[in-house]
Length: 330
Image (cartoon, rainbow, N blue to C red; front, top):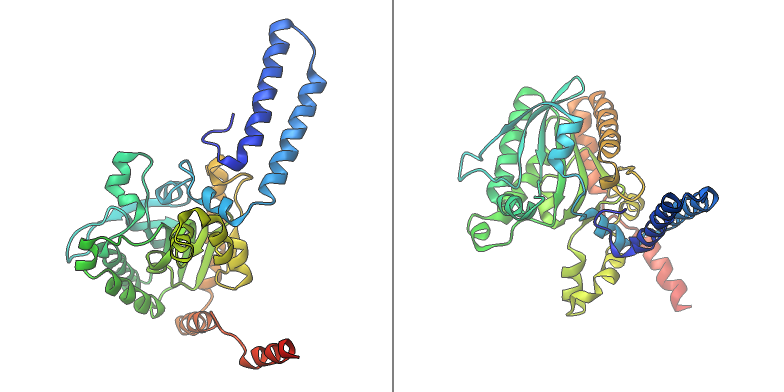
């Protein structure tokens, strides 16, 4: 049976329930229902394929937030070795929402920056639901500078609804902390890779996302605002979140088409939570391949390519816009 099924997965759940009833009936009455069981299993596979091959933007958002989806430390445990967490920003304190430290990816020593959510209420309180305070971003910057000092690549695992917007966060200058990270990551003299593994919300995600290569898992999303917040602003009602999700072009597929991300990392059918080991294997392979590719460039080439990459975002042609307007008028 499906564990924690989402609304659009209920047809699969119903078919699985009927399959289990069929098997139970066969066992209880010693009847041969093999052909019926096989037909039902085929129908389940076809239904799963039809649903997961045609997911809407809102359905992918739901998958990105699934309670059983692997979190950053799950990937750290599966993709990296020799993990050593480092604490504190040396200014205010340690942010549990952003566990970060040293690790090895294959033969490469690196610095890993993460967002971490919680599985239950106690852990979510500890991790602040993955919403970091300024000290989290300052800790990340401290570790990035450490990486630069020792020539270590930086890998960011992004999974946050956004930076924490509370009073304490504002008092300690959350916007300044994120802005400084954007500037410093652009000039970081080591290879950098960022991966959106779940939610990539607003500046909270971008604060560790300015990298040479930006990857995204197949069912993750990356957006300037959450669909609910966008809906509340535009329609004065959060119920229009599905429409907002479509308009925001926040899915991995949309972002790839817009050149906001460089690569989509495939997930198991139905989402990373269906097979965390396979999801981690796919991510680990993508990280190693991209790191090997980046290692072939000189630092000057990395900086130049990184600058060009982000300067191209949002670029458009005024001449094309003028031609389109002329055609529309005629």
